[in-house]
Image 1: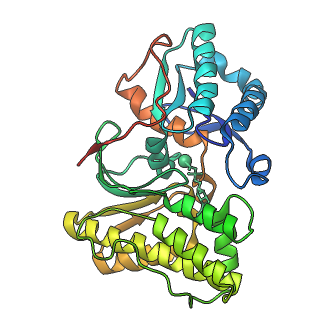
Image 2: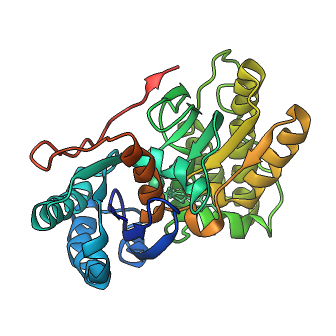
Length: 326
Ligand code: KG4
Ligand code: ZN
C-alpha cells in the first residue's frame, strides 16, 4: 500500500491505496474554505497553520495500515511553499519512523490521475487542466512523459471565477458561486473574447476580469447577468483555444481535470466538441475534481512501478515547477 499526503493549497488530505488493485482503502480531506472565505482567497500562512492541525488528525486514523505500507507519497510541487512544506515534513517524518522510501508527486500529475482512481490509466491523452492555480493544455503519454502545449499568460480559469465572485460580493471559492448565480442570469453583458486576434494557443483571463470590474462599476446590469455573461465568455475562450489544439494534434482521448472541471457548462461545451471532432471525452468523478490525496496516491502507484523514489534528505518543495514544452 501507499500512503499519500496532499497539502498544496487549502485542502489537507491523506489517502491509502493498494498498489496492485489500485483500491482506495482510506481517504479523508479537511477543507479550509470557511476559514479563508472571509479574506476572499487563500491566506498562505493561515493555510499552513491549519494543515499543521488537520494533517496529524487525519494521519491518526491511518495507523492500522502502517505495517503494510511500501512508500509514502507526497505532493511537493507546485503550490504554496508554506503549505507544501507541511505535507513534505510529515512525509519525511513518516519515512524516517517507518523506514520507507518517499515518492514525490507533482500536483498537476495528481489531477490527471484523478481520472483513474480505482481504474487503469488511459494514454495517450490531451488534457485541459483548469484549476485555481493553472490553466493548461498538456499532452499526457504516461507518468514520466508529459509536455505542455499551452498555458495562461496571467490569471487561471478558476482564479478568474474567484476574483469575479469577490467583485460581485459572492463567497470563496467563486467557481461554484458564479455557476449557481449564472443559472438565473442571461448572457447579455458585452465582454471581450481574450486573445481572439492571436494565432497562438494560449490563455489569458486578466482582461476579462477587468471588463467585469468595469461592468460592475457601470451599475447597469444585474449580478446574475454579469455572472452568466462572464462564465459564458470564460468558457468560450477555453473552447476557442482547445479547438485550436485539437485541430493541430487530433487527439483520440481528451480529458478535463482540476477543480473547475466540476463546472457543468464547461462539460456541456466539451461534450459538443467531442462530437464535432470525434474524441473520447474524460473527466473525473465530481468528488475527485477538487484537490485530494486519492489522486496523489493513484499517480504515486505509477511512479512506484517505475522505481521513482527519493530519499528524505533530498526531498524539497518546488512551488513553481513547470512541464517541458511540447
Ligand atoms: O484544483 P483545485 O481544487 O485547486 C487548485 O489546484 O487550484 O481548484 C480550485 C479552483 C478554484 O479557483 C475554484 O473557484 C474553481 O476551481 N472551481 C470552479 C468550479 N468549482 C471549483 N470554477 C468554475 N466552476 C466551478 N463549478
Ligand atoms: Zn489542484
